[in-house]
Length: 123
Image (cartoon, rainbow, N blue to C red; front, top):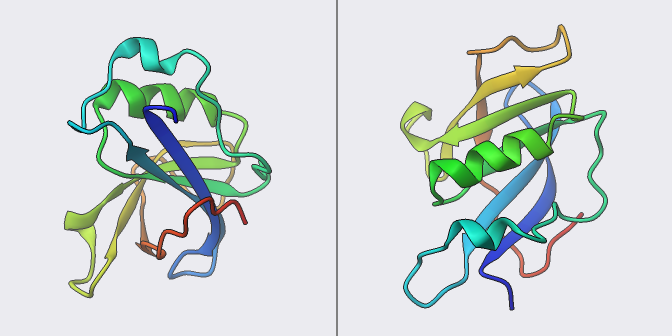
């Protein structure tokens, strides 16, 4: 098993924009990873670059930086922040950090709900 596990699920923002929710899971017993764990790390199969991507999960900033770079081909990329939600369970805001579209702007906060994470989900 790899130290970093990524799962993908198709979702829709509160405003109706389709996106792919990429959940980051650190699978080590102590919850720690090393920079060398980036070697061979791949995004989940079936990424749809014509949709946005929201990255979510407890991880170091350097892993988020790597994943934003890897998702560059997506129409937009955002990072989840639970502090920006509406107060309902599993809600938060996804802050757009990169875009190739007029649909969203850098710095825009998209309302999203964290999906239930299914083991091996790639839909």
